[in-house]
Image (cartoon, rainbow, N blue to C red; front, side, top):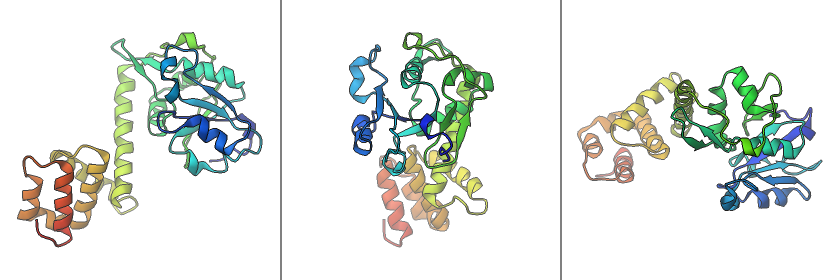
Length: 263
């Protein structure tokens, strides 16, 4: 990701539920600016798992060691002061669903933020982003930029952003696409001729047999891609259709069968 042109505008948004965000920041930076986003909000009771907004100090090792944090956060670009960006993000801690109910917005999650932003039209993206000019997905060159800066909100505005039915539909489609990409990588089908098409078909089969989690589906797709004839034999079908076995047990038995062992 190319952030070298304005490093002073780079902010790091860390998920406090998946890592000790303040500790991570101070391990690699002697003097970062840091705000816990739940501080001073109705979510104060959960401050120990609060997402954290960090502005690395000049020459910080944080940006030079993305492997230490890229699974736990994203990068933002903004020329605004840290408290301005922090308060705008506090206004987005929860959103309004089409039903009118509130729901947490995990804008600090690498796996969830990009699909969400892709569901917004340019004006919605501008409003949602406020003083944030760009959102970077760590470990890639994928960047989503707002056409221009929008108004910065305050923490008291939380819940102002309204989701529509179209947003929800697009978000589901994006999440499904990302799921298929991850399974393709797990199974070794990524990059193969017709690999994505084969992966999509095998995911449908996996779900037909009751495999639901990403790990379960990925294991099944990898087995089916490499050992399809073996799984179609009577023994393989027997394992797949065995009632009462947990998914992990069926997958273990399929792996043993595929490698030449007995059931």
